[in-house]
Image (cartoon, rainbow, N blue to C red; front, side, top):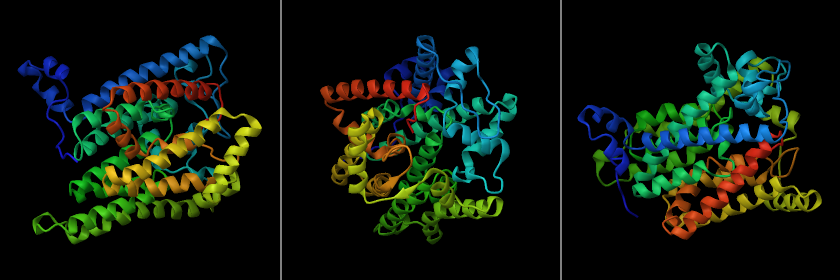
Length: 406
């Protein structure tokens, strides 16, 4: 496995564009990942917006949802085509939390606070437009996530693998959730930066990211496993000067601390916790993985549900990638994927047996690192890009038309 530091130069094109000494600051700012992230963000943000405009021209799209008890916004004209089309499902719940906070007996306590808090803060200079603020927060988080992913993978692989992994992530069938008012981009950004800082021994920087990830999604608490392994791995380093200080042993506990703070606040503010709201409101429950897979297959055969079929296929693919990655990837990567994949494979909710699977798989970035290693072969690279992009278009069109994609 080749070890490389984050590269000083982003690409030949970037070098050519910044040969002027007056632009040296730009070259320094874009090196090591931000240039790649900005290029992908601008390209995909424009592509998704144009796709939404085309979809609205081909047929009437459903009106944007309104959060329970609140008015619908961005309901007509270009305002709807660019902003309102993204107001679907969970986006409205996050907007509710950003507007009203958590109230007694409020099921919105199932939705974690960091994302709506950032939405509320960003909406202030945007004249209170929470939908636009959500898109801005997700966009900034996407850029941070791709930058962190690029730097993290460059610790273990070369620049080409890091670039391909960022590209494969960005055109994954559910990748539009990284740009929608959902928590995927924020969670991914915090997760990759937490692991990046831990892998390079910067525990002081890893600590705040680890605490915040516990206030973003329940799965954030599972980062304790890879963080604990990274601490043990560095503690066993023969070079004592490279060993972490004893307080760094507390960093793996910080995601649980973040989660615990929110659970305690939810109990005080609403009388519920997120773990009580999910089964009461959405019928959330666990089942054995083989039962979940069997139920998914029966659901597909009975209803011909293409979205559920894609969820099942992607879950099986990521399970295979987890097994193959045990030999090709750092152990902390597998410790990040395995518990999250176990939860995805055992939970069941109301709409379909594997509801939201494609969205939850999106943040399992080590799978994209493994695919990027195979992407050195041109046939695999272009075949994967073509298939993934076509499925991305399929799911995005379904989302814009109000289908429950995730």
